[in-house]
Length: 373
Image (spheres, one colour):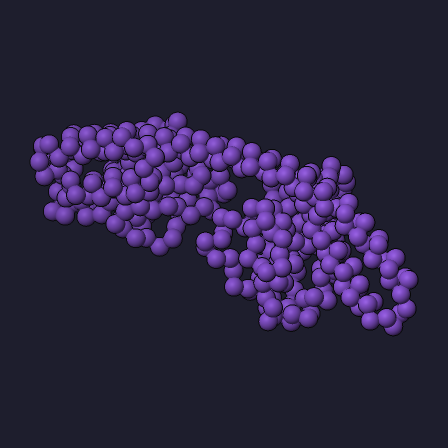
């Protein structure tokens, strides 16, 4: 009867080992854990190919367009949930049954199973919601799978569902802890920034006033005029940094109004147009005229787009292209704006830090632009 496992104890060993790995270290790399499970199933059986397909986040949450994460020895072309929609719908009621290609009558399901090179498909449920499938191909010797071995594989599929659920709980907890840590760090930084900014701002105003009075007392052709002008410019630059510090530490209260996002973007581009031309940068906008108005703070939106577009311009000192695209989401209740440039991109080691206050790779940057965004 046992035609799929090499020995009677193989299935029991596999289950025990799997349960041990899941329960021993809940923080184990989740993808590695699932890869281990799939490889273990393949080693303990005479099946040619075994694959695990996970859906992100859940089936058809965005009309089935999401890519499917595939773990296993079988490398498919990139597929979406839409490509296996009939298999997904088969398991939609949350009932744990096994799909056997030799017993299926639905031609659409058969075609999808052939695409996956699957003979058997086991559902992976989390709280009765389908989150993935375990796909098994043909046996190497062309032998059928015994019913008791199917039961063992169903248990393994259940174990995978438990692992998925545990991983999600752990990830949510870690994200919450990270968020709490970041909030506390930003709160402390905000208090420090406010203190420093106030201590610096008042002396700067006094210094600027004195310098301006000195310039008025000097003749226009006095050689000191140029030096004093430099001092005024540097004071203005420092004042701008101080104001950014204050804004970061204590953002101004929102003044919401119906705002045309397209108009905000175009007005921001007008401000940056001269600098873009100097850097030989072309801007290309795809913003529909019929975009709905949004209730938001226009000043805050201008600052967001200014910082993003200014960063893009500074990233391409020898020329390039900036593309701006906008379209509606969620039945016109939201607008997605995408800004892309042909610059060198963000180094991988910096990608996790770019929104941290004071983090910058520029020699003259303050590191507050993206943190304000």
